[in-house]
Length: 176
Image (cartoon, rainbow, N blue to C red; front, top):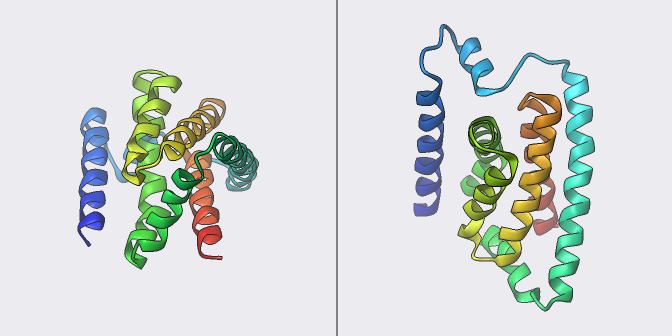
């Protein structure tokens, strides 16, 4: 319960930073647009998200294989252990709130203010809560891919979906 509250507080602070940096907005639609989520062709955004999801899974698998080869098997299991020990509400937050807020903050705000490398590094470091070097490395590379997806589309719609689907696949595999 404490972790869930801590995560929600952190996500609320991240949203507050982004919203305060935007300044005035006329409507909720205007706010969403200024966050980086533009009106889009939903089917095109979905196809882009699925293509990047495949890339995320391939890269994640390769990183896992490399880390295992380097002797980090116990480290790789930490994320699985954390997810298996999480309550239903925590997993729901990971699936819904995390993908939206993290993309708005790391890509829509931080990447626009700095660059893709810095935003990806901070995104990777943000995953230190799992206590896993493999997760830090993996999240950094996943951040690069999500950042490239955002650069390519100039819209957070597809990266949010890719991130959501990636979290969904990860959780499904952990509990399969």
